[in-house]
Amino acid sequence: MQVAGLAFRDVGGYEWHGNHLRPTHHKELRDWRARYGTPWLTYSIVISGADAGCGFRSFPEGFECYDVFQKEPVLFAIAAQLWVPREKGDLDKKAIMEFANKWGEIADDPKECGSDLQTWYANLDSICWIAQKLKQPVPMNPRAAKKMAEQLRSGLLNINLACDVITVPSGLQSRLMVIGLTSSLRVQATEAVVDGWVLRHCENCTKPIAADLSREDRRYCSDSCRVQAYKKRRRKALELDGKGKTIIQIAAAVDTDVKTVRGWIKQQGK
Ligand SMILES: [Zn+2]
Image 1 (cartoon, helix red, strand yellow):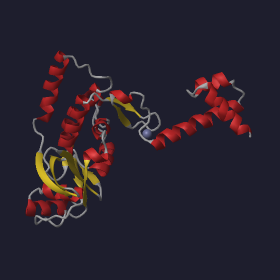
Image 2 (cartoon, rainbow, N blue to C red; image 1 turned 180 degrees about the vertical axis):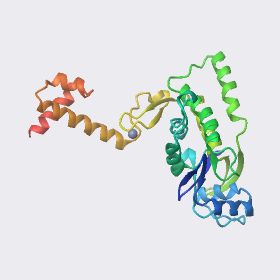
Image 3 (cartoon, rainbow, N blue to C red; image 1 turned 45 degrees about the horizontal axis):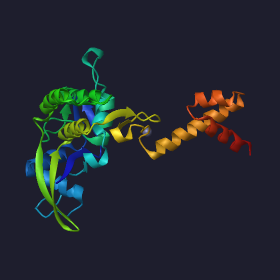
Image 4 (cartoon, protein in one colour; image 1 turned 120 degrees about the vertical axis):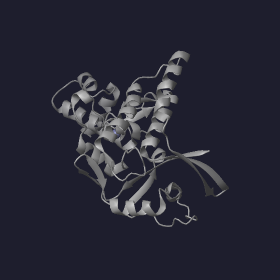
């Protein structure tokens, strides 16, 4: 069965009112919910691009929905970066707003309109805990696995799920839907532990990246970051060459092998 993580965000953005974060189209959302409840089936249909054939032909004005698992496989780790330990002070409201503008709210109840700072804190706390674990490979001897399962289970107790059937070229496909951003992030984080992921940061832009055990050498989040990092190294190497550094010094400084550095310098001379 295919699995989707359904989340939605206000395209118009979010704004803080005191400690309450509110979507721009909160009136439209409230009206929509008063009329239809929370029609997750509609969100699912919108994501799959199928025609809504079940009475819900509209969608709350100003909102866009997306599949968390498709769109950003490490969103839980990006969210975890928002977390601040209590002794170090409050969460950064501006950072939370920026996250919400891009991904929507990490709220408890998908029926609520808007979310408060306390809710963000509690939800980020549980996600961050898992992201912390993934800094190194999680040892999985039977005893450690049992303990880990117990800890992960507590985060999965209140997951919202629904089922759907969609049409595909070959006929029908059933689909399990994890409902809402909070539930989706918890499932995503749990899957990361189960699959033995290790979290790193892109060496170019510091975005979290997941390296499974077969790809432990992964250093960049994307091809574009890999290329940018390459260009940066090359530029710096040529700069150091201009300052009269030896090839060996340059190679060490830009973390590149001597042969490559020699090639760069030779190329430039032409
Ligand atoms: Zn990057």
